[in-house]
Length: 168
Image (cartoon, rainbow, N blue to C red; front, side):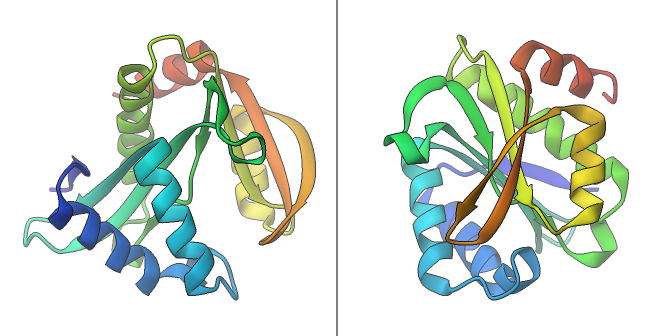
């Protein structure tokens, strides 16, 4: 059974960070430690992170979001931007993915009851995630980042929450 914990303690954030750093190049090829640590810091300060563990209490995945747009100094808190999510190979089934999305949906509403939009960035050259997110949201644009070209998908928070509830 997979358990999802919202990071609140130093111990949880340490485990989240250790997992994130350890799997960073699987998340983004060539992902430098410094950028991964900056992303963890931004999540801690501007959003929420979740740690997924298995029945043996081993970290098997992470998920996160921030409120606001990094390029605008995290203004516009009505916009939730999903962060990098990653699961170890054994736990990559759709059930874990959808449980993670459901948890993010609930956490977004708790963090900002006025959330109006969800944005999902992904590498422009990742055909799988672009196809997946394209089924859920509309491509709202592309931009150059420290990680390369990123496509950003967008949908109203209410639609995101409704989508997530379908799989509960």
